[in-house]
Each structure stands twice: as structure tokens, then as C-alpha cells.
Length: 108
Image: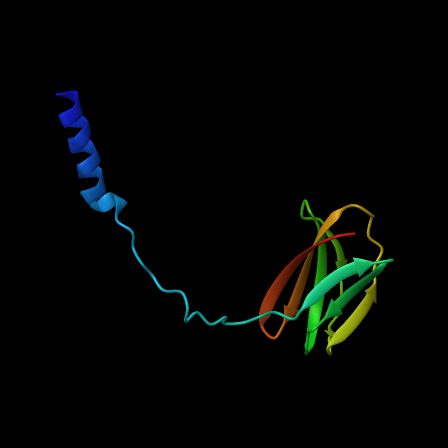
């Protein structure tokens, strides 16, 4: 009796649609955008690469305190800002550019 029950359970589980595999082809996926923008901090300088246009930059500590705010600055392809950040802390960089806001995380 137990063997028949076990065989029934095994056969039922293979025919159950819960275990069906949905075959989806991902060969034709095309990336919509690849960002070439970089933000990094080294030796007291915040480097902003790959941005085009005029924008504002805000820097927040990880707990949300604003530690730096810029006036409108020109961010043509590469820009460097001298900013004093505490080494080893994490910061949120907000870049307001072309009616959008981009956010980056850095460790100073």
C-alpha cells in the first residue's frame, strides 16, 4: 500500500503544473542604457566623470545630514571638486542635472 501511495505521489508531482518549467528565451535582450558616469573620492577631491551640462551637487552623510551643497556648476565630461570628507565614512552624492536627480554612494 505504501509503495502504491509513494508511486502515486511521485507521478502526481511530475504532472503537477506547479513544477512545470517555463522556457523563456533571453537571447534577444538589448541593454537600454549603459552608464559611463562615475563618481569617486580620492585625496580630498570628488571626481565627477561623464556628466554633461550644468547642475547642482549635494553631499549627505549616511544618516542624512547635508555636508556640502554647490551652486550651479558646469559638469562638462570631467569635473573635480575639493571637498573635505572624513576618511572611512560613507556619503550619498546627489547630482541634479537636466531635470533629473542621480544618486551615488561613495566611501571617503
